[in-house]
Image 1 (cartoon, one colour):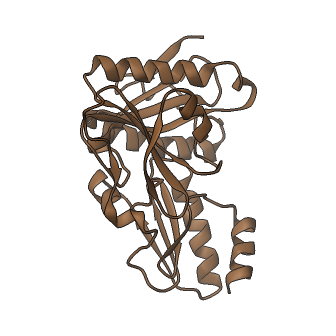
Image 2: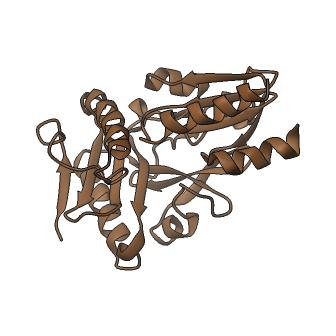
Amino acid sequence: MSIIQITEENIDQEHICCAIGNDKTNRARAELKKEWMKGQFKNGLIFKRLDDRGKMFIEYMPVETCWKPVEGTKYTMINCLWVSGKFKKRGIATELLEDCINDSRTGGMNGLCVVTSKKNKPFLTEKSFFLKKGFEVVDSAEPYFELMALKFNRTAVVPQFSERCKMGTSGYKEGFQFVYANQCPFMDEYVHLLTDLCEKRALSCEMIKIESAEEARRYGSPFGTFGLYYNGLFMTHELMSEKKFEKVLDTLI
């Protein structure tokens, strides 16, 4: 298999791995993601996948324009590195990461960075994988996030989480707050389903859809793509099914 880069020229013809079903729902999800990508190519977005139909891709961009509350200079932020199903344990994640490292070195970057967690969490690449590749923890944010970096230039200042996001709080003091971006193709659909559940129970809730890197720094969770807050405190970065969220509501309310 070879690596394919998704660009402005081929994005309408190529699949993007995240939502690859041919049904109407998955086509709509993929279109949301593609529209987000089209707006970010000018900001240095790179999306590469293996030449097969499956979830095995890497997405990255300069930390200066990434959609996470992370501050830094001349570092490559890995938004997502995902290999699943039959493609796991075949060295594909390493191949994709090495390609990103080569791009970053060639581009004169100071290094790479990625958001992980102290313990394994859904939608976050395992910390142990990056440790084996030479990354080290350079910062943390409540309640479980860690920022890791692979340093090319040992004298350069490493990226850091913004002070706003480190405490795991938001400015919303009552009820649920859903902060999300279409960087992930599933967010828009599921956030609306979960807010509908809140409204059916007459629970206070607010949706904040992030529309720019600047808004991500202002409102985003350390994960960037999604954050759920309750009474101003961070709960999770994991987008839940309706059934799972119902159980959460039963324990809180």
